Length: 376
Image (cartoon, rainbow, N blue to C red; front, side, top):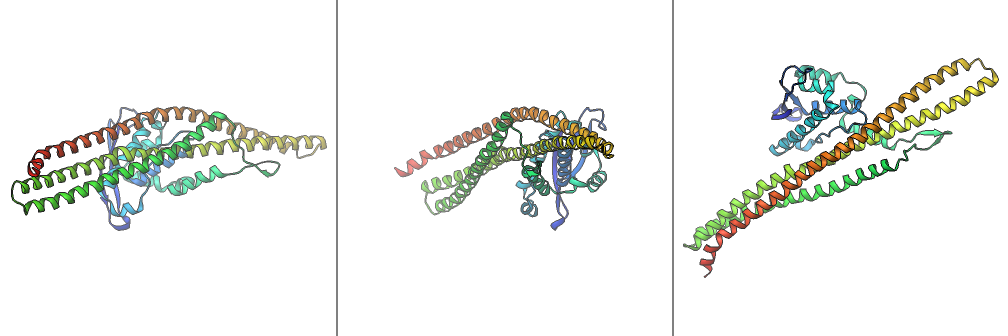
């Protein structure tokens, strides 16, 4: 079990960042003891995500919360808690994944001291040096890459598997529907906050009005103002609950779908590479036949190149087939987890709304006898 807790602001100005306490409790023999506590920052989580993405092709790497530059300079309590919660979900999904939990990079992330962690980040080369935004550009580039595979003509090599096409369509539609649901969840949070603020302002105004009136009207107004302020607090609490337990899970799954799309792009890249090598092997066979006919001295060199191409082609086929196998397993796992998480999120939403409605109704109902006495 892993927990991300105790966020603390470090530094000032543009150099400021938030550090987190990451606590690991495990009985894995390769870990140093049953419990370990380390301090990590957001860039360490990014390092882990990038390492896993590069090494585990075909696996849906859990997403990270996006880096919000504007919010960073504010470091508001709500932003910090949302990020802490998202980072906690991120690292626990990795730790509970049957393949990712065996990663040496995860072990380093969970156990290395801060200096070792910093050295690991600074020693990265190639793709690992790129920022998250750069990586997303790579994913987009992979998706749009066109392979020159047939007689020098540009023609993309695409899979024709109907089930895979159905999967891709489902993922793209799911992203659209999640984004639409999240947009309206955001509006609900905003509406609760605005209504809560309006009730607070109304409560203060009615209290002042009550102070100008004689009893029992003044008392009724004062109680109405107090109830309004209490309900305002309830609405603000429910708005925060909606944000953390409904809107944020929806945003998390939008990010998860984007991670799946990155894996789809990697699969497309592996398929095209496989096709390119198969085509190159065919052309090499044609060249070798010509060299045999002409008894060229270059035949031996060409045969050596042919064997290398065949080895590369076999490796590309194995790589592609492994990605396909892993993706088939991953989509089942993703569907099962999504059913649990979305079921919980919508349950929390419905329960919160029911409790709020009952609380509001009870508060107003308790005022009716006094207000009716005044009006009669």
